[in-house]
Every structure is written in structure tokens, then in C-alpha cells.
Image 1: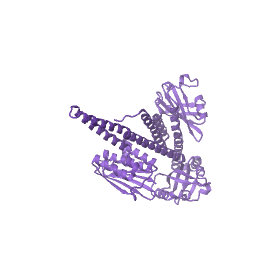
Image 2 (image 1 turned 180 degrees about the horizontal axis):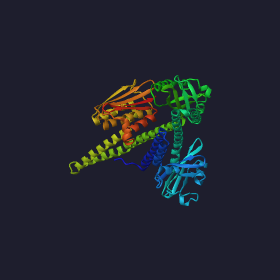
Image 3 (image 1 turned 90 degrees about the vertical axis):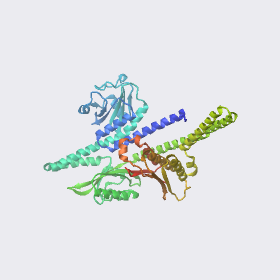
Image 4 (image 1 turned 120 degrees about the vertical axis):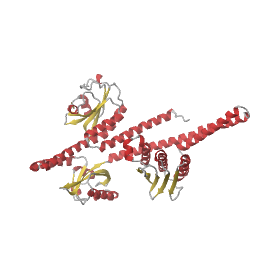
Length: 545
């Protein structure tokens, strides 16, 4: 039986903590950017904050004008359950602690409020003993802050502050975007009212146009309008900053002139789809700036109608360079983590084979010697049983060592390793599995990362088949093109609804799928999962060479 060393247990615990933090921050980033409702963004912020920093109560205060902070969302405060009451709570920014946070733009921890002379007690928050305030900073300015409380003093540590600050960096941009969206929503409502009440159209329209111009010009994201041919009619100041072109260098030109060549066909297809159907479309492309830089942007666009007639397209392009850098960093971390796991598997497998295996072999040899001297005695029977037990232990150690890191993968390559694993899989499960290799050279070797990713994804896919699919036939297919390697695992099992599965159990039920996706991304590839109930499942992993 395998016993974990303290060092290994500590390493695994650290890995799990880092993975949990990374997953929470990744999920928070996705959740915060997917919703433009300010109320929902604030609630989402408090939800994920609770996963990172254990608090007894917490609130979010947004800046109102130059001198006040208004509590806009809170959790677990007795006496502040009424929404309107909550909105009316305001704090002057000259409050010493709030003023210090605004001035330094850094978090502040009050270890014990009863010993802090600058602490101001508020009715309904008498329970607060340990307090931490974290600023929400966007474009160099404090737009608000959130505070977390504990009923016990000296609870919050530097690690709590670090986690809270990391989340705050992601939340500030989402809050500002939500505020901008609410302004846009209010503008749309005002514009609709103007259309209905035509008698006030002239004056109201001029006012609305001025508000729109301010919103259009002051938006942080690039906003554009182009006609049905793709020729730009209007762009804002942010579009100039993003592209490096002056406004008159953009207006009158087609969008294809500013898109990376390899993305032109993709954008053209999305544009045609926009003309064919209503609704908002979003996609990511690279813009070629005037100085030759490639700027990754996220584009959201919507068709413009005039009296029911399609006349053009309005869209917003957001610079996602920082997001891409964060994704690259996360991918690099995932790769390093997977490499560390594989190296640890190799080390443990080697120790099992070289140390425990040798010890068990020595025990077996000694038992054979004892057996020779006890021939015919009553002890011979027990010696024989012990030899059989040692043989079984040797077999288990050998299987465990092979499962941890199959030597055939390192020695003979991916094609041979897949066939070897499928043979063992078939012997264990009795399930028919066909391996179809379309490699020009079956002995061709690929990088260790690519071979490991393909092998582990195939291993996880086959494990899921036997656990969930109730399939009678499985095919593992390996193909190579000029610059990509493709692995396909498909079965004729019961299939599943991936979207429903993730909604019903976002973590536990999809852990295997998440593991495959992480390995695919760490190797620089993509993982596609296609499944329908009663129609089987098809998993395709594509990785560039």
C-alpha cells in the first residue's frame, strides 16, 4: 500500500491551493465580464470574494461625486436588509480610513477596530472587530472600494489582502463597464420616449444627441458605425487611440483594411451573418495598428435599423491585450503544473520500480530459501501463501508504476503507447476498441508535451467511456497534417448534453472534461467535445506542431 511522504503531501496541498485560487479567479473573471448589470456584477463580486477571503460580512461602496461613497451591495449585516435603506447609507470620503485608501490606492487592514482611534462605528455594524478595505481602481482613479469584516480581531493576514486585491483588479473594470452600460440603457430608454412623444422631438433629440456624443466620445472602448458595405461612417476617440490612425484616416475606409489578413475571411463571414439575422454577435480578431502592432480586440456588434430597414452596423471593440497576456500566463502556469505532475509521476514510478520492487523481490527470494529449509513441515504451507502474496504485491507495484508513467511512451513514442494502452484497456474492460493510425511514420516522435497531452487525453476519454457511456464500440484515431496533429476518440454510447451537465454540476461531474481541456490548452492546442443523447460522444484534440 502506497504511503504519501510529508513532502509529497505538502506539494500536493500547495498545488491544490494554487489550482483552486487560479480556478476561482478565472471563473470570477469570466462571470464578471459576462454580465453588464451593475447589481449582478456587485453580487457576483461578493460571491467570489467569499470563496477567496472568509468573511462574516462584506459590502461594496461606489463613489458618488467627489466626496461620497454609497453602499451599493452588502452581505450579512443585521439591520440593513431593506434595499432603499442600504442605498441611502453614505460615507464622506474625508473619513480618515477611506481618505487613506483613496490617497494611497492600497488596501488597508484594521486588526482591531476597538483599538483603532480613527475607526468610526456605524449602527448595524457593531459586530465588526477586524476590517479590511480594498480600493477599486480603474484608469488610475478610485471608483469605489469593498470592505470585508470579521467578528474576531487580527484575523486577516497579508495573504487575504493579496487575494482581495487580485480580485479587485478584475472587478474594477467590470463595474465601470456595467456603469457605462447602465448609462447606455438609460440613453436608449430616453431615446424611445423621444420617438413616442414627437411633439418634443426637436429639443429632446438635440439633448439626447449631445448626451450620446459625450458617451460615444468618452467611452473607454472603441465604438464605430459602418454601412452595409463595411465602410466606416463614424468612430470615437478611443478608436483613434486603439489603432493609431486619425479619425479621417478611418472614416471612409473599409473595415478589411484594418483587420489582420488571416482574420479577414472570418470577419467577412460574421458580417454577412449579421446582415442575415438580428441580435448581437461577439468575436475576437487582431487589428493592425498604424505602427504595425497587432492589437487583439473583442468585437461586439449590432445591426442598426431605421423604420424597420437595415441601414448599418454599430459595434464596440475592446482592447484585450491584458486579458490575452493573462491567458498566456495561465496557460504557461498550467503547462508548468502539468509538467511538474508528470515529473512527479516519473519519480514515484521510478521509486516504486527501483526501490519497493527490489525490496519485494528480495523478500520473495528469502521466502524461497525458507521454503527449501521448511520442505515437508507445517510452515511450508504458510511460506507458499506468503510467496503468492509477494507475487501479487509485485504485480500491483508494477501495474501502479506503469499507470503512473508508462515507460513505453518515453521509449517508443505516442503511436506505440496508445496501442499498448488500448490493449491493456481491452483486457481489463472487455470493450472493443479500434486504433486507427494515419501517421505517415508510426515511429515518428513528437515533443514530450504533445505526446503526453495526447496520451493523457486519450486515457481520460477512455476512462469516461467505461464509467458513463455504456458503449459497445470505441475508435481511437491519430492523424497528422502538414502542421497539426489530431487525436479523435469516439464511441457509440449513450451520449450526454454538455451544457446541461455543466449547469447541473459545474465542477464534480465535469472534472474529467476540465482536466482534458487544461491539458489541451497547456499544450497549445484545442479540445472539441461533441455529444448528443443516444448518439455517442466524439472528442477531438488538435495541436500545432
